[in-house]
Image (cartoon, rainbow, N blue to C red; front, side, top):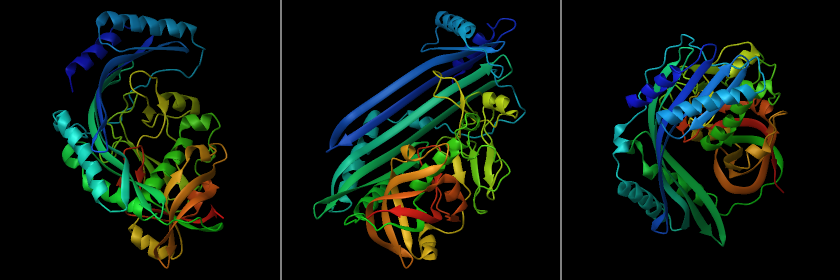
Length: 448
């Protein structure tokens, strides 16, 4: 990491006045996105940003300001703006900065200098090669919705008058492709990913195979009859679902009364085989980081253990309001925002069987390969769950006929209690949750 960011942070903290607490986040990032379409570059964007975000706490008032430069004169103006904003803020007895809690920052290497050295023409070639490969994967594939290469690198420093001083740096990249397959005048879509920290981690062929398989296996899909049945969630769907569950387990959501799990700490809320953990210190997670948005050490936080709700996730503010301590779960959208409580890298503890073995155990049911409108279909207060879906019948333990235009419905608490098996096929995706095949009993399918 460049030492200049730490120097800037230390300098601003040194400008604090008596009786006030000051926190500064200094960040620098670089992002590239290349999208191919019909053998040419549809779009190419490369952006760099840097800047600071400064919080000032004066008694029970908090102010915040940010700037997109590291110039000393602007830094002083930004600190002054944060002080002015604090003077007009609504008093809140719980405001304050994070304080060192004795948890050691994990020694994880998330930065790959090689990614920064990849020339733009190589990134363009990857996107073009990805599009060409998926078009050649199957004669029924008639088009590509998107084929892209994305990379990002970032470095930051968080420092405060309370004794926080942490630095971090990371790189990440992925390729993704979405294709169209057609038969008998009907078109279906499929997608695939490959993620890593540097170019050599990527396996574009896996993304191509996944996209082609997902699209072609849905050709000829029909609308199923309404019923209650066992479903098997594909890893990508599971990642989305547990991401929604994770949002209801944030201390912020609980304090606002927007969680069906409020006041249920210590209760059995899921099947005994369910263990859900948030762990941004796991280097396999795409969103891994050594520290959280307030500079506290990332750590493994078991949320549900053997079916029992053990913890919510907190930043320092929600922890103070709840009368507990931060779990190292402050999230923020870079230097331009203040922190809030949220899950950072969710994963279910895997089981022993791959998806094929799970299907054999299920016998008859439905494999859910994708869902539509998930976030709009979940009530965060009641936990009611209803979303559009498509997938495949499971007949005698194997994949059967494709299905489309149906709805799956239950509630988040009931789905957790009805989990019958967790797969071994952990899939790390470019999001804040890992995927794994998940078997859930007694789910309502609404079709014809």
